[in-house]
Image (cartoon, rainbow, N blue to C red; front, side):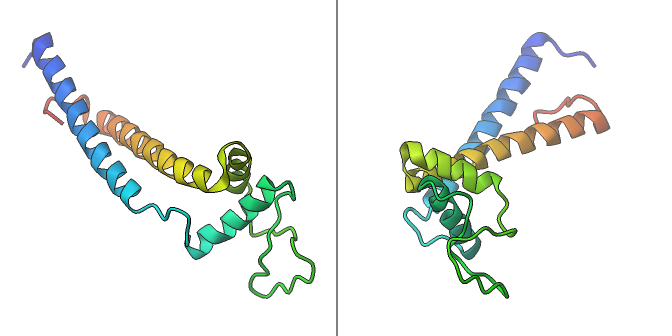
Length: 136
């Protein structure tokens, strides 16, 4: 069965419209549930604390004495901190403020994650079953 270019364009446009609607709904829900100025989750607060130290120029350190580690001098380095997120938040926080950086970067990376998930699933679908002949 062959399709004209008009039918292919219509399916592609319909696919992009459905994708945009789904992304808009999910992104809207994400924005509705932003914590604003806090309180953040337990893990989120730990990384915000490390990001605040980066923003203030203290370095990648924490003011939290966690678990069995009885740190006598705070702030201190911790092997429990994965460095990429607090460094990104801290340096962005220097430019636009830490709370604004948290409220901008979190939804931005959520949206990027949704788009990348769509691209990966679409490519897997095309590899497994070939190009789609349906609307979706």
